Image 1 (cartoon, rainbow, N blue to C red):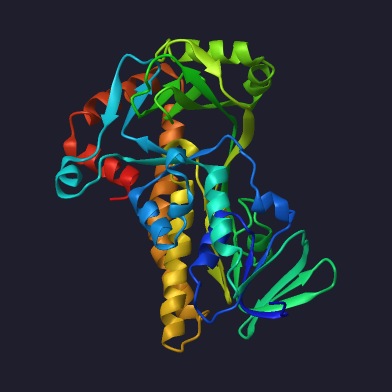
Image 2 (image 1 turned 90 degrees about the vertical axis):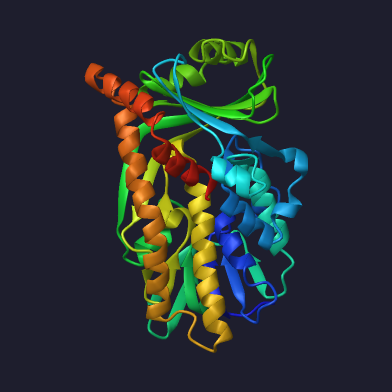
Length: 397
């Protein structure tokens, strides 16, 4: 397939863009994906240190798309419990699978952890051979225009592609969002995320641990019993000193941070780091266009909801489009796009602002706020409805 006009153009071949495209398997809608990176980057994604916590709802969507089945069983890690600490590891707010879910369903875990590169690989493998989808790589975009008749994308090589609907799925600093004139609430946290794996002597008990240490946040994501992904969030001013450590020094520093919780640590792989920024578009739609994935909303990783929201948004919009197409209706009508906007914003806004509020509260190291945090954890542990609601957010149920 090599046509200048498609029913849908997607800009960005990340997981959200590929997930959106996969929904149109076996449907007589043509899709063109435009990606600036080389083909090998998306066809063989490299390990990037990121472990994605997936809700049960995300698992259901991936199963329905045939993506979950492509991920090896030994690369899917059980997330049984989660604990939150304040300042040290002496007291935790503890989350387990809610009793009602455990009794009424076969759910035996809060969720699953899968490496980001494995998710990207599975989505690409599921989409790459679809006859109605073409992927154009190493393509820079010169301009984007939309009006009531459709959308057009001008590439740097002079070609112009047209479509009935344009989807932006490029990044948190979305070029598409900017060209569409959509504003965004942006929060540069002034912090760096450093991620790496460690092996250890003691079992992690398939339990995720989030410890808000003073001046740093340490998240421990369980993989195998004796393998854990460490996520350290700290001020940009402190990042260089940590990144300058050798493998033994870094392992010892994390061992100290977690109070020898898992025994002796050994670095197990490469170290990666990323700037920390949150973003939420003021609207997810414009004329014959919509945003999904990080172009729509990019979350602080503390609540592990970024990918889940991206996948949910892609599923919500694609479902509306498939329904309209089956009825012979316009797949980019203002009414359809606004329905997507309202539904997805209802999911994302409370989580985005709630997460930012929690981050602000748990990174304020003043003595009064330390006391408030400690009290919050202790009171919440004795409020079953609160714990059930939070566990529901973690599980997607």
